[in-house]
Length: 368
Image 1: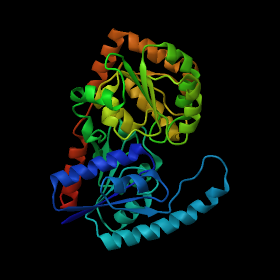
Image 2: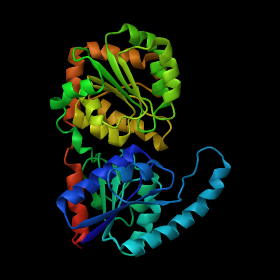
Image 3: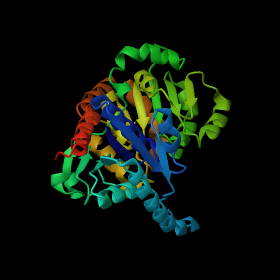
Image 4: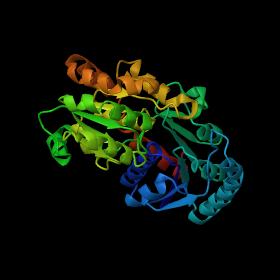
């Protein structure tokens, strides 16, 4: 029996790749036990048990960018998390530990490496996160999704694997009619899917609210994921128009149906989402969040834009032009076809299997 810890989280962009890796490990190696370690109060503590894996939370927290008294507690939470991580490792006795980014991966991988347990980093972004940069020195392997990552990590440790994605995104064409029925949408209208990430995006929601009249008068139908923080604000705005062809959700659990139904997609530019969009192969407009470290969403988005595989609207311009640009794109058949063709070329569909194979090698004491 091999034992693996997978640590990290905070957003869907970290959680879904982690689950994909766990599923690939179970598929490839039946005699395996997997434990997740996350951060208390974060998404992973709720989401991971729903897919059948145990999870332990650490009290770790990150520094806030603005001055706040909460920052005074960060060092104390870190020390407590390091002690708890040591106990988890002592009790569980993992053969390898995987970090997918997020606060929780720091204490766990640091303590594992100190005990000589092989550690693997999975860096989703084109611009490496601070936690992974700090952990890279002791890691045995660093799995990345973009070229040029030797800017951040030792070249000899890097493996280009792509980002793991949900396994239900591999055959969307066959479920399009089923998906439209699920969302109660018209088979003969084009569908605009608008995503703000798992937590929602204020700018994207406000851009849609500002364009409700335009959407009402258009012939396009919409699936909107608002995030739980914005659902009430959006629904209040909707009450004035009540367009029957706009479906509003705080969170979409059937993303396979959402992607299958879509003709055009508006999305933030988190690394996990971009990997999914490449696999889905639909024309998309990316709106990078300006509220992330090192502006890495813009860097992620530009990796597609520079290959004519996506369009970009900046956060500051979104309220004025995002929906209008999406409607224009939906009417430009040639541009839609070109974007779709180019983004499909960037897909790396077997990332989870490749990462799982390397983790098992390390767990078995082999070199990678």
